Length: 242
Image 1 (cartoon, rainbow, N blue to C red):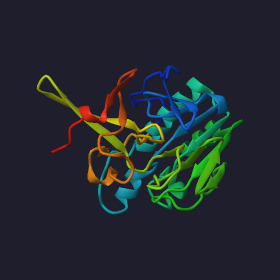
Image 2 (image 1 turned 90 degrees about the horizontal axis):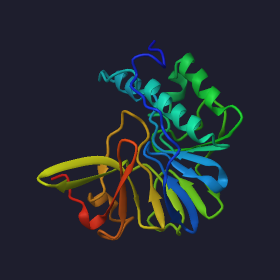
Image 3 (image 1 turned 180 degrees about the vertical axis):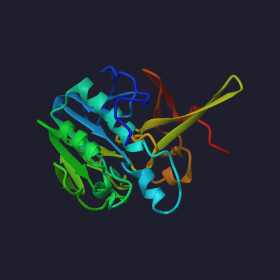
């Protein structure tokens, strides 16, 4: 089994955020892909997809088998930086319903250690519709805290204040003849969709037709993840993948 601290490229995250307001609540976008809510001392992450590689391996598809370790290392770095009293995981924390059963003992121990002394909320997702087994924390389909509602999939008819994941938002820009595509936060000021936090996850361009129920055409902004910072762009600056 691969050790957590060896041969995994990680970096020390600084607790510096780009602040925005959603439904009157000040939240911070972090370049790791996590969301920080200082008034509630709450850290929010989405789409961890633990044990994705082992899920694919069961079907004969071989992927690098260290995704859970690397995602846990990344999560540990962010928790260490912010020291939240509450963590909310916005669904698809495990790649399938049996993912928490397959979690190796060492990884389970590390996750349990991260949970010690803080409230932990698992939001169910389409990949993990049941509560994880043998792990601490409470499980909900969605949860409301203050003016914000946390759920996995965005709801086209949601009131302002929705925080969700599921769509793995990515954005592409083209400048000086070059194209850059990166995971991003996507928001119109009423709702916010988080990028996937897991290290072995793809992304859906925010100009894809699947986004149309949630954002008016080009009337939204993205914050693309960079090394140590975020890059904000309005929807009008973005290009599709084709």
